[in-house]
Image (spheres, rainbow, N blue to C red):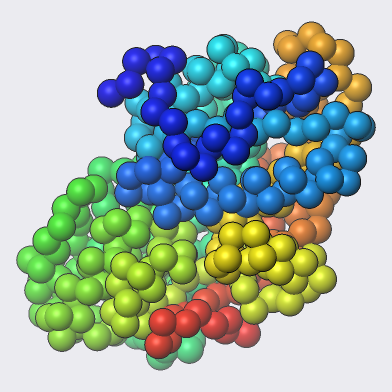
Length: 383
């Protein structure tokens, strides 16, 4: 493990060299998983931030000042996220920060931002209770509690599902929260569960659980997993002749599933706050710009990061920064809740009152597209 303030450089992070920042630059921290099992999410997120920051700076920046991104690789690990937050807040003295990539890491690192009264803005944290950590914690990622019931309803209707088996990771905040929300949604919708099986992060052999599931003859498998485990689960299921649909949570919502699971990802259902097929003016502009810059299509994680940077820019444009870091950090906190933004992911505003789980991301989950995978291509199901 790296010492507290000694980090391994990531090649792409060199694009945001802190040494080149001027006194008038606005330093914003980005702590994302750029290596390790969560890098398929974190790299997309970093790219979304980079594109948005470049657009904002090209259009005059923040009242004439430029955004400078200070990027740290938190590797998808709780201890590394803690180290990255400490470095960005106390050594780099960023105005605010984005990240980390996984909810597990957010539960560990966000309290550091809260204690230092520094805004932390999550764009991929969907587990319950993240924003209940404190009033400096924000997110624009749609929670599992919001989206999973909608996903199940759409999958049941379109795939004629009458019962399901459940498989989830029981040692991770995100996958356990996903299971809890899946369980509630299944109960609310009175959908029978044939069996419930578990796995742990880092497992590679899931045949025992899948064999038990196959014996119960479910119409579908509800899966709360990250891609590192979720993709091989689908591959091994197909190898066992278990060819039923999978209903996944946010961890399965990435085009990387095509690379990791290939044809085994067919008939995967996920709810998404973003769709490549949505060709609104704002989303089309984002898709064209992202594809041109990175030579690949964006995904949900890039879109949410892109929108989060623009949301932040709107808040910053309404603030007169004083140079007193404590006062300026508090001003960011006070300005963010009022921002309304229509971007790649559609219309967004923060909930003005958190629900019982501390959720504060303001999308209408019933308007979310539900995406199914077929022949390695995702397409939108119109509800």
